[in-house]
Length: 386
Image 1 (cartoon, rainbow, N blue to C red):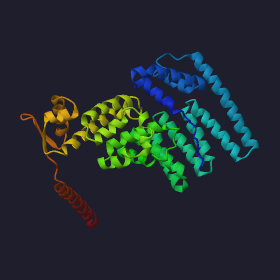
Image 2: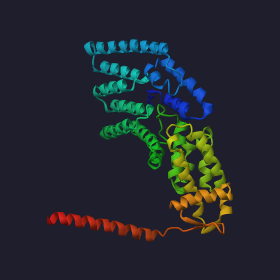
Image 3: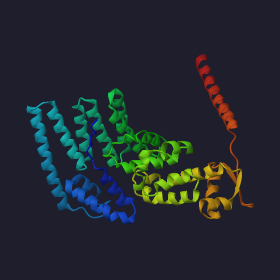
């Protein structure tokens, strides 16, 4: 089967540069700014330039430059509308559809969000095939990613799912899983994101959304967070698709293998490196950086404590390569919040585990659900008697 190359419409690299300028590491900002400005000039992106000039580019709006962009935009749109009018008067449905697509693509590529969305909706109405309709919806999802519009992304993912059920092909089904997984990362649903991304490891073709090495990076980061050690070994550590590109992604291999192999000092070091290298440079992961790092520390502490009834604060600190005061302070926060099942005996410098009784927990849950059911039955009987 011939692989379909989907154009980068819009080019999400620009959204990445925009993020780096505003929130990324200081040493990367100048390069991102230069690349962003070059792309804006190359495509005469008047609407996008006006949108980001004062915020991200941090300089006053150049009215002369803006007018140059606007003039180029006006001339190109006039040509596209002329072609569309000619197609509507003299040609068939295919030519009309092509003209509508061309206009919508141009508006998308210059960053004219609302007009582009309207143009794609008109094109969608004039498109008959399920595959072509899905391609338009994927473009609308990418526009949502470009402008960080989560409502637009989720609505169009739902539309794509409905169309897929009507008869979407294998490639587009897999493409939708990647899009949805990427979106779920942005809203902190790492567990479902990991499931979707792992299911498309061997079939990834969505290079219009991200490079394959970025896809693997996101897959590993989500999987380390959400999978058990058994599943990590089977689905990630032994996955040949992941090992293919691991050498291109700094710190990721040591990050996942050190947690699995219980090398906690290395894990803490690689976690710090992953935070600095990958979370601070990703507009998808950055908003969830503190949450992710906190939760993954809890996972590492719980994994170590599972193997012991008790251990000293000193040995635990040595295992993680940190000081006793740090372990005491960090662990106590999670213990008091009920996130780690242990108690700290500060006087004797000992951490004692208190694993919850699984059978007792099931019994309590059964009692709780039984009470809830009885209450509902009582309410229902009162309604019936009335």
